[in-house]
Image 1 (tube, rainbow, N blue to C red):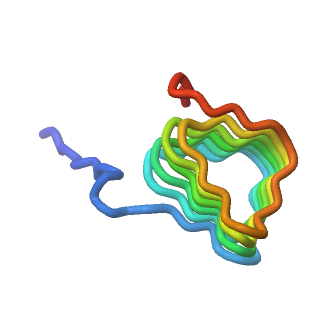
Image 2: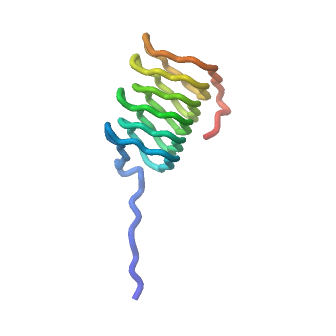
Length: 120
């Protein structure tokens, strides 16, 4: 007798959350949306949208389709879609994106490359 398991698709509204007070040392790979309110010491590869919350902190590179940064990123950010740096964000590293929005008071130190050819 065979048992079949139905896999849940990430497009059904599910997303991952890393809470405040949680630290992960190592890389994270996810197919669904990801919200980081804690700390990651490693790289994040997200096949959807990543949101770095106001208390979120990443020491590593981000690769995603879309990204919204409220917190701190020390590393490069590469998006194939839109990148939004909110007023509370602090980004130290290079940015590679197709669409960039930077709110007043956001802090960014690095180079920016905007091109339609950015790949994840």
